[in-house]
Image (cartoon, rainbow, N blue to C red):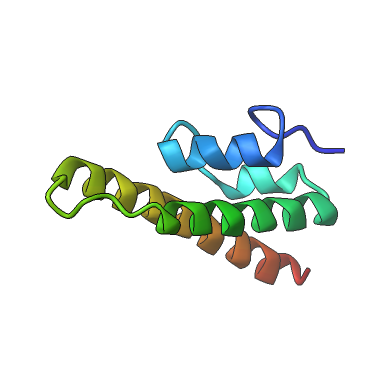
Length: 89
């Protein structure tokens, strides 16, 4: 069983979205296929949560923060997809 930074896949995804953890292939090498699938599920779920939370358009810092979080999760998803394609999972 892989140990996710933060204790669980959801905690790791929250840390990625907040910018505390950067997703790299080195993180993914330690994980088994079911753990990678759980991580992908949590990334997708958190992305939906962030997109569902619409700040006021006049609140520019909140809009920028939301966009940064979406970008970090999107980047993590791209790294995960790339890793799975390289490993043919």
